[in-house]
Length: 633
Image: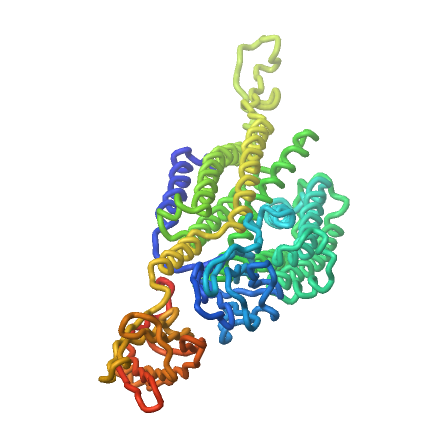
């Protein structure tokens, strides 16, 4: 006989799972990124340049992809001044660069960008820079959220449907394969399997058609653009959706085979074994379907990708087994209860074990994913992702509490089913002597214990336990749907780490000088041949820099000279001299593509020629900053 699980034991199990969530949710530090953020730009936001730049470069916190219109530079008259689409700068996948037109007039220019981060989510933004002096601008860029558009809302809706279809398909199949194979022949379960498959197919097709407009910011009518669809299917998110459709087509064949094997059985009392091979193939399909999500969303970006992807796969499969299995059990309990039949207690026990294992996997994988995306207590309350995650944890707590009641009902069912499985023994008839002449016992003997069956025991109707189980399972399933909705919302929200990294980059950019300036005086020993030369390097860090040189006379006014030469030397590392090759820009000297390979103190050797025969070389120094780095893991 299987004992009834004690309430104390169940409570301790629930408390242990909750303690694991609280202890490990943010119990570590490390970098993980999903949803790219803009970490820098050249020119920087709101800068005023003396000369028009040759190109605009954006740097992001992770790899990005872009389309032809991902980066637009708009003049004060709202005319596009970048004739060619964006390209990677020096082959770096976390950058985007566009070439600008020649002879740009003075005024304020607007840079509008929209790219797709490595986890498949589009991000956008805009900033301005000015040439000569700021001016009014007629450029207009969208300032709303990407998810507020019609395409964004449709994409979120079908993403939720896709998760729902996966849960129904995987959960119902797991229930039939593991818990009650005979249920596969019942019409409600067959309909549930078909509904899960159909919802997943329809939502996947819709997501594939909407993917292009979702990335580029197009309208709903652009879903019929075949050229855009062609670009979608060769990208990672689009390819994952195509693979999902192929797997669903193969899954339809497998479901058809199983349906033929179980066809014609509606009682489901005697489970039919689908076979180890069919179960293995079904598990492989479930893992493959889950992989089409993990390979194109949060798990595919950031650190520990080889670990994060299989963890995400297990999380999705466990979600489907638990939530879809709950819905299937609720439907079976309802349909059999209406027909006056019960679900075998051992099938309920097998589902209880399977569901508990699925919840344990959900907790373990969810803890890892939360650590990877949040990483701090502060991130739970200061970011949208953290606050949404807290809501999900609260609903999970409620589900575990309700699940404790379901396990009690399951234990009672198993407890009542165990005696029924045994064989009752009937006592042997016993002959005893009685008073001779008794009217009911001629011959002086009476047989006791043979007059009829033993008195019936007080039986408990198992249907009462199943009605209680059906109610708690229905509440669990409803809360599971809420968790699924919150999880869908999380997949479209920028994780706390990425939001914090983007904010830190913005603060660092605001605090760090946008240029390094060195002013070096010179004196040739003649009247009118004294002054100072000012060298400006922007942004003043490793990589490409703009260099501008201006000469001031002794009284502080601007002076024009026939020639300025500049070389830079990193004496500590033995680098240089590097010739800046300054060019006369009619009033000042400049170059816009000087490459500095290393950070540190650089020596400036400046030669100023004021006439055909008068020149002087002076020395100065400037500190070149390193490239900004992500926090170490």
